[in-house]
View 1 (tube, each protein chain N blue to C red):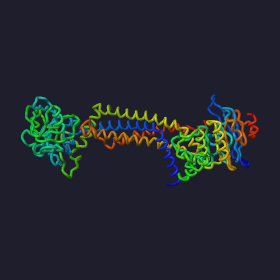
View 2 (cartoon, rainbow over the protein chains, first blue to last red; view 1 turned 90 degrees about the horizontal axis):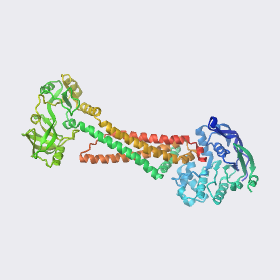
View 3 (cartoon, chains in turn orange, cyan; view 1 turned 180 degrees about the horizontal axis):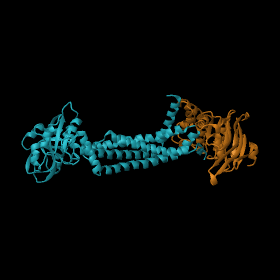
View 4 (spheres, helix red, strand yellow; view 1 turned 45 degrees about the horizontal axis):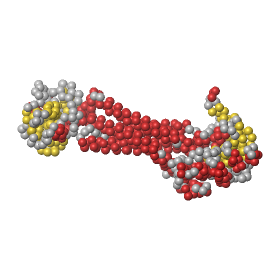
Length: 240
Length: 387
């Protein structure tokens, strides 16, 4: 997928500290980062380097202490909590490591939630959710519950849920960590095929070197900063 | 409904699905609340029934104004008055009529020699004011026949337990004098538990042990155009006697039992226990329910659900369990109460205040449980979903 060069995410000097005094831990130490529309960018690095914290501040589920975070030209740090929630609801889709599907809701209900939260009628939300679930190969199991599906199928539901409201930023946190190699590959193929569009940016945090080849670029984090950004092929070479 | 209301409605529907989906926790939650509502309603109902029994004589006699000795604190205690007090009360302006009433506890001796304590009520023979509220056999007017008494359903039951099937025409003795049953009636059971035996005032004095003063109460009706309270205040000007409207006398009697007996404390303790059990079981279960769903709720927050919406979802879940538990608990207490009333004991009375009280406690428990859960939800940053 070619990127159109338009900045989707732009961060400068992002700092985030947890705790106070002697117990304070600085998780992000001034992160500068750019992601563009039309690309899938992966963030990699050792455990504790700040990947998840960075992902959280970029998508607005956590407030940074300092710096600037612009997502599609909106400065997240200047938004009130209510406006930030609304911004997330309208512009961000999520794929979580643990899927985070609500077990007592059918997969159709789970997948239609982002649309319902944006005020779409139930009929329209379920129509759109059913279309996407069909697209990810679960069209015949719309009324199944998450516990009746395999891990790979659950992650496909999560992908359908993350895309149902046409978000411009898709955030994926270790999307293949709970899956075996074959299912992990299928999920990434699905993400690449259905999520990557010219007007959308996909950010994936991962440890899984088997999926690096799906990235357009790879940002390597170390000790709270983005150390280097590689083209996918260059970084993959480290692991061969 | 606007689009905002519609989406809220849909999310709240899903919140209920989330609640019902966890069957074990839902049942435990509802079970705890049901037990709490049942215990509180049933025990409060028995307490109210017991308090009502303390004033049964007032309702059985059913007159607007009671006059007694100034030292009398409640209807079940008697400090005898002089007979002349009837005439003095009659002379008060605004009194339509005033009649004497004897009330006391004496022993009745059955034909086989066994004894039964009874509450003897001696009515003014000419008017029979204060006569039994409901006759099941015989006529009230027959009280004017020689040695005539009318007994209530408790007497029939108590005498039966002693092998004596009491019916109209039967006789027993009180103070070595014959009493002939001319009628059976139904009267409200009293706190004392003894049967009511009705007779005329003069005959009651014959059955009762002799005393210098024997008049228990003067029963008064005010003239139609004079308020009872006005007549009461006029009667109170007579030295040495007190007067109360029946409502005042009931409240005074109940207040006496409330203050001078341990009944409210014992029932209050059980009611408190019910509330504590409800808070502990339901509060803990609901907290666990929210705790287990915290990632799901955080995921909803990450996807754009506001704290207000998540709070509404959690409150709806808490109150749905609360309303279900309240309905089941109050329903079960009512069924038990109906069974008590059918059997005649223990006492049971369910005024709307008890239902409101139980409802308030359940609302408090739901709010407390929801608030503890919400505290966790509010503290949980949406970013928790990435951990």
